Length: 338
Image 1 (spheres, one colour):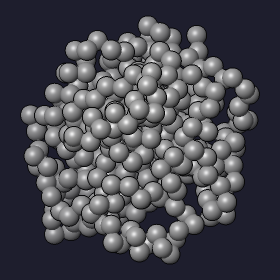
Image 2 (tube, one colour):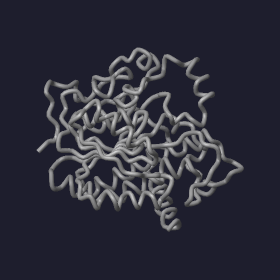
Image 3 (cartoon, helix red, strand yellow):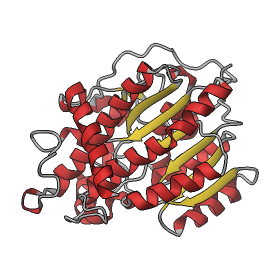
Image 4 (cartoon, helix red, strand yellow):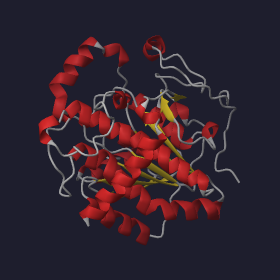
């Protein structure tokens, strides 16, 4: 039984790799999926019902996370917004004003704290809700050097490690939901083209918390590479055990959101020069919603998408060895933080 019902025929089902060209980025020319950089989250989910599905969106209270939450709610899903701040209640209110029949709940989650992640997972699992789709959307960017309460570099702690633990703690629920309903579960990690700009070794396993060599841009790239490697290894493990769950990564594009707060002046200056490459928020949430809900991607796992089309990754991101090493390293960090 498929959860997807298209009201009208969708674009071609073929999925060849789509090299993200500058021209298609500027013009919004559709790729193999039928969508491109100009597509919005509503457009890529048009005619698709998410009724009966439960979707959890981390960082769903602002920016593209809020738009992702709104569009899933619009399509009929029960949306759980997981956020660390008081904006979350306001976000729910805004969605309910636009879509009065929407089902939206808010739970507190601070991804930089493993204690908070565990408390959140306990609370969610105690609610006896199913979980069909997990959108690992929240993140921080270009922070000054700082260690989390678990003594882990803040961008790595928030962008990767918190989501790594959260996903593991919710995975049994997702497996049970997929098995009992026959509906494919989907996990979407928000990565970035910034994964191309990381430290020479990819992940600094031995020097993760070394302030002397810390570079805010490369540390961000490292955390975004970790998002891809996490998806790659989890996808492999789920396939091996025959679980009906896919795991993919997306690059949302360049969007001016709260994520830029540590580098606002720099990003505004870059935006002036590169304004043709920037997206608005509805366009920025499109790839997340496409990968999370569109039936064209049934069975597709372990891939990386940009502008709603499969995209190539860096050499580091393709490494099975690095993916396994990161998994073991992440497990060790979590064990040592208890």
